[in-house]
Length: 435
Image 1 (spheres, helix red, strand yellow):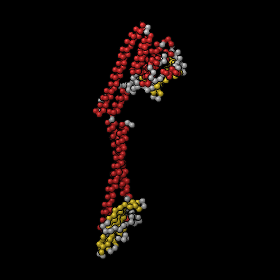
Image 2 (image 1 turned 45 degrees about the horizontal axis):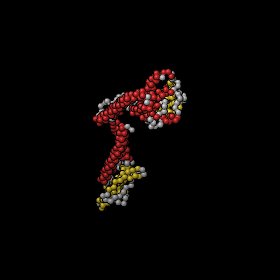
Image 3 (image 1 turned 30 degrees about the vertical axis):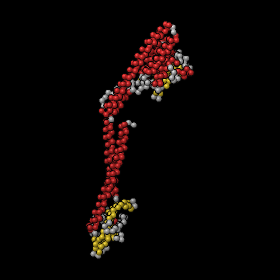
Image 4 (image 1 turned 180 degrees about the horizontal axis):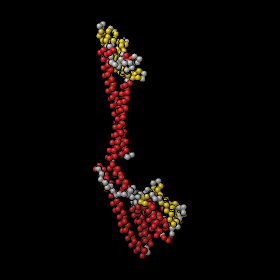
């Protein structure tokens, strides 16, 4: 998962939790505030009811013109009751006619009760207040009850919830879009570094060229230093190996010539073996090995160049070459290594072929597969096993293929590849390299 997606996903989860908690908190606060307002409203209505009530003996009368409009309107949803201390209803509002509001209660003097109850599936808020009422014949205990259904209250809460979630969702989307744009702008230097590294990988440029913010400038500088050090080290290494080869070959050639004149076959043979061993080990050390950075090598072009040279060397053999190479086959590695592998295999094929050589190169599951077959005498199975046995020195290899196949095997192993020898369909040896 990319860094940009990680940040977007993490921020989205945090924002989702934050928005949810905010919505729940605001909704709870709004409900508490609405309930408090409902309590104040019911209290005001109850005190208004107490203010206009007239009690004579145990009878309560209520001037109709002083009643709240809602209490005098049937089905209004607000109901009023006055009861005595035995829960006998002394008065009820006209709004209770034909309705089934909560039953009134009786409370002791100065007691108050505010609660939410349900009748069936319909919720109500009720407020009751007990008083000691003075009359000409003495005091009488009364309880004033006010109740209201929650239809309008619930509609108000539902509308608030809908509006709240709508605005919070819009804000969340806006914040996510803003964050995505900020991240895109903020991470753009990293994307540019990635693009430059991709161009370095495919060989379009040699180092990171652009200037970047100070937070990643140190990183890009170090990458450039590492790339340059790697190139310099490889150059010094190969130059040193070349110098070593030249410095050793000249004395060996002088010794070889001197011994040939003296006809000392034993020492001459040992010097030849030393010369072959030096060439083999120098080639092993010079092998670049697999690399993901560098320009891809056109396999078809390399094979064509090698074939042009070999046709000139083996002009008299008039060998027929069948080549099957996909146009898109590329080698991600050192061009010199590929030329060494293909050159040695083709040179052996030309040397031992009678009239026919086939060459195939293709990509198999992301790996380069090169298959070279000839119609020559081939390689015996026991000799093939000996040639491919790990750890064999160049001078121990089977006569005929010599140091060349050992070099190929060493390069293929450096690329974590595989080399197999089998009998070809046209009669000779078939060598397959997969790297």
